[in-house]
Amino acid sequence: MLDEPYRWIEAINDRRDYIEDQLRPGSPVVGLNYNEGMLLLTIGSGQRKIFEVHNRTALCAIGHPAYIEQLRMLATDTASVQGFQNSVDDVTLHRLANFVLGPAIKQTFESIFGAAPIIKMLLAELGTLGRENQFSSINYDGAVATDSHAQLIGGTDAIESAMRRYLADSNSSDGTLISTARTALEIWAVGRDLSLHEDDESDDSEGSPVDRVQLHEVLKEELKEGQIEAAVLDNTRRGNSKFRILQSEEIENLTSDWL
Image (cartoon, rainbow, N blue to C red; front, side):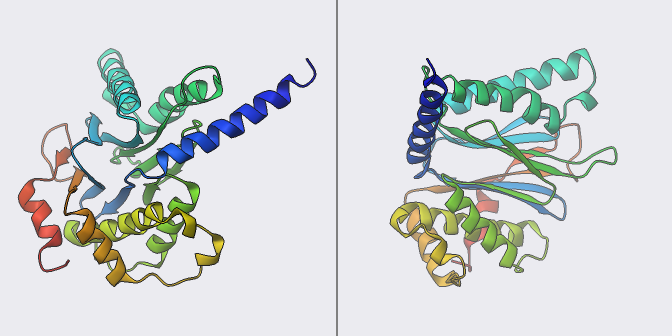
C-alpha cells in the first residue's frame, strides 16, 4: 500500500507522455489582439476549431474532436444558463476557464482509469465594462494561463515556447486585421514546422534566428490541402454578439501578394 502514491505519479507521468504524443501533430492555434478586437486563427483540413461561446467570448482547441465538442457544449451551455438566470455580465472568461472547463479537464486527466483528455483549449474574451481583453489557455491537465495581449497553443511545451519567442521578436504588425493575421500565420508556421520535425525540438534552437522565407514555404505547403480558419471578436460589430467568422474574401486577402 505504501507504494500506491508513487504508482499514481508514475501513471500520471505516463499519461502526460501519451497525451503530448497525441497532441504533437495537431495544428496550432494563435490568438492575438488587433486594433478593433481579437483574432483567433489556425489552419485545418475540414474539422472546425473556432466557436462562439457567448456574446463576447469565443474558444478554439486542438485535440480529439469528441473532447472538443463535449467541452464546447459545456462552455456554451454554462454561459447560456448564467446569462439567462443572472446577467450577461456574469458570463466571464475567468469563470468559464477557472471554475468550469479547467476543473472538468483536470478531473478527467487525474482519473487515470478513464480515457485521457486529448485536448488543449484557448479562450478569448473581448473586454467591456472597464475590463481588458483576455486570452486564456487550458492545458490537458487543467492548468489555466491568462494573458491580456496574446495566447498560443500547440501540441507540446517546446512548440508553444518557439511560437512565443517568434511573437516576442515580431514587430511586423501595424494593428490592422490583415497585418495581425499575417503575423499570426507566421507564428502558426513556426509551431507547425516544429511539430513536423519533432527530432529537432531542443533548447539548442532557442537562440537561432527564424527564416521567414522558410515559414512562408511551410504555409504554402500546408495550404495545398488545408485552409485558413479565422474568426474575430469585433468591437465595431453592432448588436450583442461580437463574434464573426472571416469570410472567404477576407481569407484570400491575407495571402494575396504576400505568400
